[in-house]
Length: 465
Image (cartoon, rainbow, N blue to C red; front, top):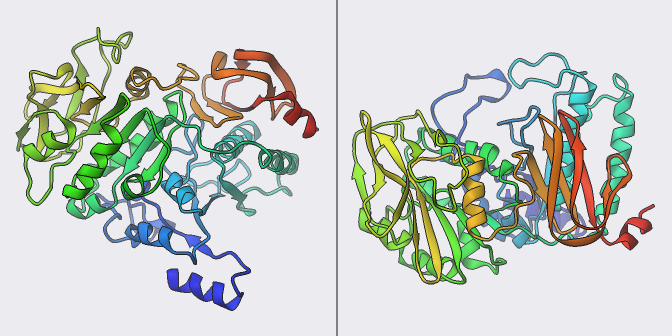
């Protein structure tokens, strides 16, 4: 791929952009068998897809952009439509992230594998959701013309014109990242896993699509190597999905990032397990927490036992999370200096401390023995880290310095809290003023709908008219 892009750059005297569909590191835990040539399987495509060269591709000066369809994991109403790439890593390297929107709208032939919107209202809500997400993240977007057929549905033409107009407007806005949460995936650790998808399906794929988008705050996605080697902005909360294999140099670099300024690190399953050897001491060295281990394969589930800590306060006591896939080995907290917030059920009903927090003078370490933490738990961790929460409602939410997008299945009254007061809040899809001189605003959202709000100074809004 790098070679092909290099040929394009040489043939065009570097006057044309070159790129490809590549880098699907947040998606490849599932093995769908494109175009029905094979059924879904229990095997991941990570280790044999060719996409684990992303770090090398991002470093190439000949690659200008990377493309992916939006995730196939949860495309329906209430779902999210993100890029399959760790997009902020691409931004760090000066690459443009593009999304192909191939939504199966209500005008499509029935597609039992991929599903489809049932009517114009659903199609519009999904297309608006994907646009709002791309706009808030500073990404590019195109629509697969054979999926959004204006001849079959004339209303699509007006929608596409609105997207074009609003897209041009967002180019004038401050699109620098403003998230306070970083979500980190390690490509190197994937080489040390089984080729089964029993872990990564819930740890990476489902976590990205279910809990994180409903957190109530925006988040950025990175390759671990870029977090360690590039000049990343500081974050209040770091969610480490899979840093299983870390050598001494990477451990030291990670400690310098996390263990300062009262930052919070969330570790899941087996952080730091492998160095030159495999040991619990390696996990303690990275997280500051002591662990125990069980070897019987089991599907670990965490349930809450302490509802008095700021992270868990207000959560229903029946809150639980995990996976039914059998994992081995399994881990639990064995540290009297850590506060147990929940227990992990594994190995024939054996319950051990599996959700815990440990405070240090300069940072906080949080650990979950089971993957796929739900949004309310993530929100509690984020709030404990000092992350600004825009909404507690559990809708899919996107935010940048001057844009706020929300996609809701249920609809209803919503109150959104902004990081600071702004001159104007304007509903961009409805083209109407919502609030002025406000640090929070209230709206009523229709069920199965998407809204995109401008939150900034009045002059910018007036100039766009």
